[in-house]
Image (cartoon, rainbow, N blue to C red; front, side, top):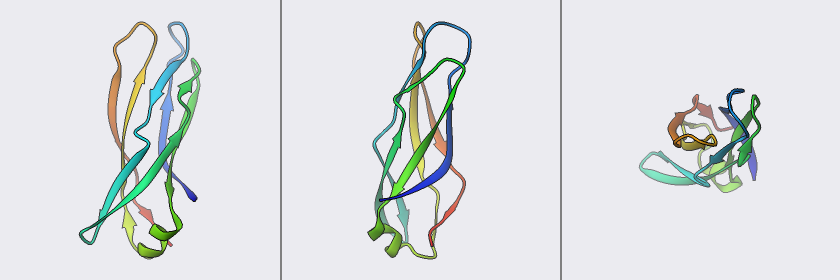
Length: 100
């Protein structure tokens, strides 16, 4: 696996009690040239109060070879919950990533 930081940051506000829990999709799909490629998503499942954490998209070696020279833009749906509040769900779109 090759880890690519795609510009996702999860922040938990300092107010309130306790850490924020985070749900990541586990995988995301990108389409290039009519073909779909599966990428895995990793990150922390909890973010401490007043802190931030990064989310990573892992690009497998076979996908890197297939997409060499291409640009991808993966989207990740992130759900964050702070104790005592409703879950907040966002679709984060990253910067374009050039596969080498």
